[in-house]
Length: 260
Ligand SMILES: NC(=O)c1ccc[n+]([C@@H]2O[C@H](COP(=O)([O-])OP(=O)(O)OC[C@H]3O[C@@H](n4cnc5c(N)ncnc54)[C@H](OP(=O)(O)O)[C@@H]3O)[C@@H](O)[C@H]2O)c1
Image (spheres, rainbow, N blue to C red):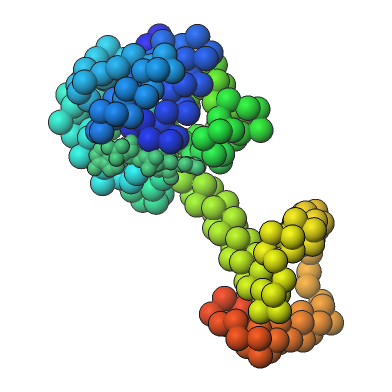
């Protein structure tokens, strides 16, 4: 079974190279030719055009910046996609995904969407999770070769489900990052080095708090807990303001936590 990867940026190259390492012949195309050259050095067969890349590939993987790029790249080769499996791992909203899935169906292609919960250097490790949704039949057919990327989880036949879960998880990650940067900024006002604070205190603290999440997921928050949280959040906001750290992140948290 032949595969193609359209888009050989950091992630597309990692995905194509993982296929090659697993013994899967893989053709790749990228808008800027130098990235195609670099991928060729990893064993990916070079395609000069999108049409050449799609060629007779049974699985066409699309890994581009956004959905505007996906439409721009795929529309000229729409007629070639009939009978193929289109696997789109480009970040997009659930609505954008449903639109491109409907477009693929109009052109006779089976559509699977992918949400990659990993970074390029981790692709190929079992801990790298890839979320899938869309055509169950197409996913089952390709689940074996896709194991070259990591652990696949199929979420359902609504094509938007992988994007919904992907964006929810990314939202949690960005919330954590924002909180971590806020913490670093707070102690930084007293000259505390960000690196040392992060490794010695912040990371162990966040690890221990992550373990509490399953308990919080279904727990009833008592009035007493809510009061304690409101006092702590007021103190965080007050201290940050006194230290000169903007309250754009923490001020909404107080009302958000109160409303849960
Ligand atoms: N990197 C990560 O850690 C990571 C993790 C999970 C998911 N992802 C997802 O993977 C996708 C690609 O990310 P990346 O990290 O590979 O980004 P990247 O290195 O910046 O690559 C972006 C790719 O999109 C192409 N592109 C952008 N606009 C285009 C257009 N109008 N027409 C044709 N090609 C276009 C670029 O081509 P040129 O080389 O010609 O610019 C390049 O191949 C994104 O949706 C991202 O959310 C990335």
